[in-house]
Image (cartoon, rainbow, N blue to C red; front, side, top):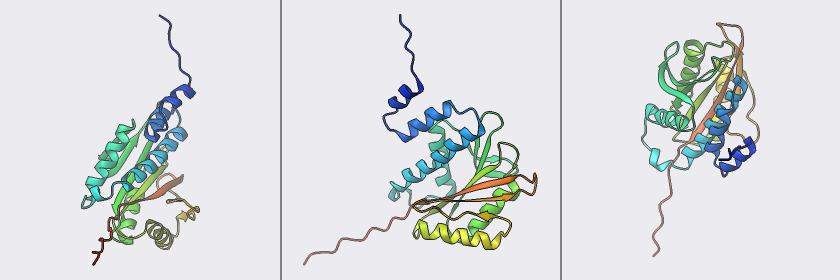
Length: 211
């Protein structure tokens, strides 16, 4: 029996354009923190787009409920992901990987910018280790009300004001997210955070009756 061999290109073709399958495949070959981080970012973006396609079904979901959905999606793509795991406290999203890779995320429903700031400070001062290969994290913002571009730009401005030690990069044109970086108080290493909104608004206009 002839042994069938596949190249990485062959395997990529087998994914048939499925983003989640492409991420799952890339995750198998990820052997550095940089490779892992690239796939985490891709997965969070994919989940944000996926959730935005089903806002009606997610109305009324709590923070924990939505975050459980995120964890389920991450696990389905092959990540070692958990919710409310103890890493300096009960962190919302914990992703672990080879060679001590660790990515931590806090997820908040956008109730107020103070609430988002609380989430950022929890991630920064309670959970983050800011050690080698553990120096990136994320803030996920569930948006039931308002435009995500307006919310994320306002949040960037508020974060600059509240945390002058944090360097906030401007959101690139067409991108939904922005990044921040600061020297972490525990290690003195740069700690980077990616701030990603998820659009869950559902307010369709009622059809007017024709007289």
